[in-house]
Amino acid sequence: MLFSKGRQTFLSQNAQEGGESSQTPSHEATSDETASETGSRAGAAAEEQVSPLQSALDEMTAKFNETNDRMYRLAAEFDNSRKRWEKEKGDLKSYCISEFARDLLPVIDSFDKAMTVIEQLTLNVETEEGKQVSSIVEGVQLVSKVMADTLKKHGVEKLPGKGEAFNPNYHNAIAKTVDATLQQEMVVDEFVAGYRIGERILRTAMVRVASPD
Image (cartoon, rainbow, N blue to C red; front, side):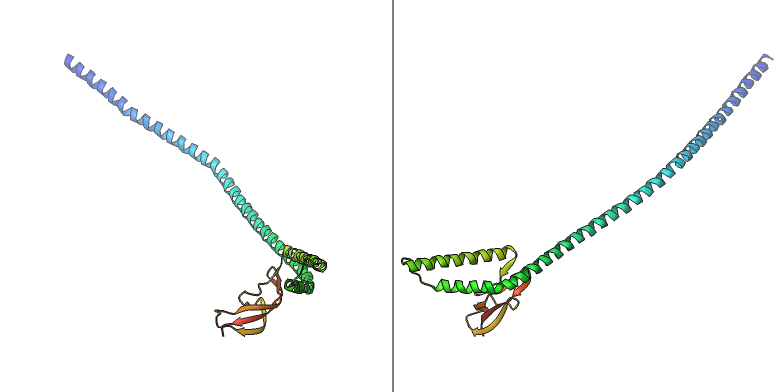
């Protein structure tokens, strides 16, 4: 009987321990499910808060890019307008100067002819008359130089002349000669000088041209 009671007590304790051990996993599973649900709710709440912020950020970024592009276009248009205005101003200035310079060319021609004659003079500066003529020559040379410097200051330049290769854009050949020693047509004499202002030709030079054949 004692053995039977002991066996019943042992079985009863094992049954209780088995019941307790079977209940523990159930409690832990419930805790995990609760944590998972809490995490899901927190993630959903965070997503609900982030979504409007992301939309606002995207909208602001799009507006910034649009404004930035507009500013670049305006800057480019302003730069093009400035360049166009500067070119038009330069063209207008050249046109006004070219009209004045064209009217001045006969005066320049007269000085050039005077300089040619002066260079051919043989003066005796020991005599009183020679000294007077020498002073006149120096005066004419000075005026001619001042005029040339003034024209150059305003962009008026003399075209290449005697000793240069013939260029139909610069030269008007009114006489021709043949020189077999040449490799190309060359200007050998200049009767009237040519002038330009910038790329605008005021007057072509009237020249004599020598050609190889």
